[in-house]
Length: 412
Image (tube, rainbow, N blue to C red; front, side, top):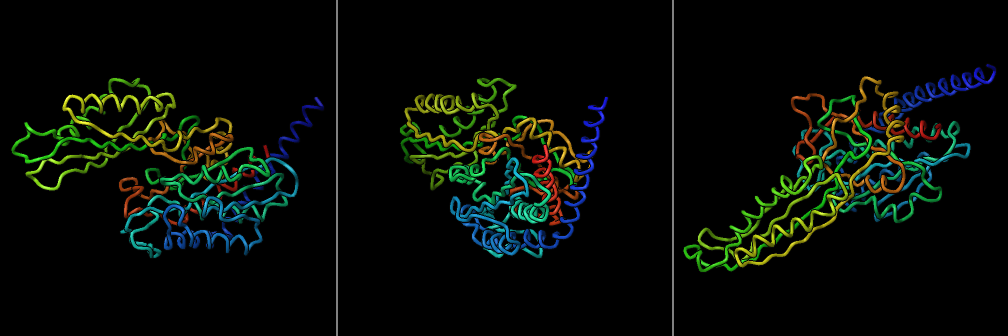
């Protein structure tokens, strides 16, 4: 009975301490809110595409130095790794925020509109970087109450080239060794003030394809004497969909999208070549590995029928993002402390979008969460759209969630 009482008292003590830590996190988020939102809006106004996030990194470094936070720079070109060391020894957790913008001309009517022609933050990475910076400020103030270390990975080039992998290869998961990693993405299709995640596969592996169909061009009035790559292209595009519908288990989601097609220069000329580019999305690694062969079999069969030829390039993208079960439980619990249990949910199914946080999930137990930013669900923000926009106050919420999950993980 005495042992039970001791265990119960320890549980109550830890519970009270965690409640107090949440209160402190919220107080500090309020203290730094203006600075966090200003950072987000500065990053938005001064965007950089992958590996060119120079203004963003300059501002991050200025802020880290202002508050005496330890950091390394120029990791994977523009990446930064900051660290807050707790007063006592313990585990190490990594929080990640990506920084890169997209080559899109902004049309959003916001006071902090992009000043860089043809470049804008159309996916929320400005908020991710600022939210991570805010979490660093909060946790730096709490370091005397923390056991262990928190690493902050300000990552370049998430959109296409995958800056997570070269940062990992540069050693950011070592010295001290990282025990778990967490990430957050603002999510346009979900209501503001709510968050959602899931255990297991959460986001797809996004691979890219290029298909060149080679025929024999000439005058369009004599197709019988030519090899028409336009007809081959039409058949290839349609036939590739039969891979999804007839060669893959219906319970394994696969997307094949042919997104561009280029060929020809005049209405009365059949061209020599037509080029198709697109993307392939999978959630199952075994299915993913089969896709190049299945696609080439289809392409070759069609070009053989027409006596044409082809070139086929399959570019492997990021792996599937898989959330660790225990880490996801911790992340959801942390988000509930900030948002309320009624505002944190489980996704019904994965999304076929890709995310290079998946490289972290391959190396250490990890979890990733979506934070809703839609004020009006009848007209939510659309990612990768020139009018993508949301309220900067959501960035402060992301700082709270990231700070809370770091404290909770280290306190496990």
